[in-house]
Picture 1 (cartoon, rainbow, N blue to C red):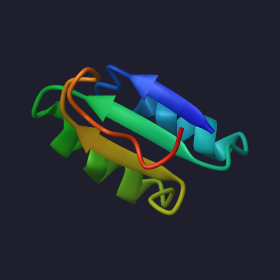
Picture 2 (picture 1 turned 60 degrees about the vertical axis):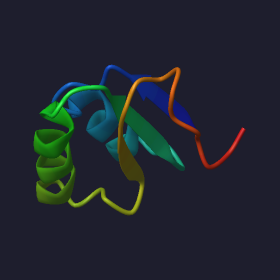
Picture 3 (picture 1 turned 180 degrees about the horizontal axis):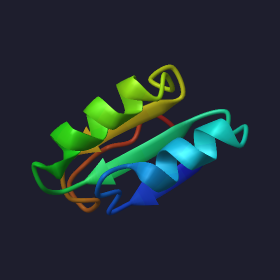
Picture 4 (picture 1 turned 180 degrees about the vertical axis):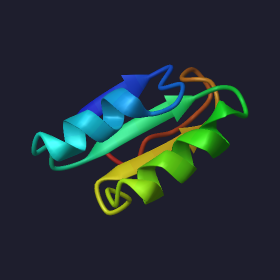
Length: 64
């Protein structure tokens, strides 16, 4: 499981998924998360990468 804080475009999260990560949480505080979601879908890793918009201090992850 990978936590990518400040994911931006999501490229590192995508690479983690392609490298075999079980789950990747890509956290982005800005509207750049919308672009990251598009790139995740375009790379067909939406089953592994979950893009979460919000500040790391304010969000709650689905697992510990």
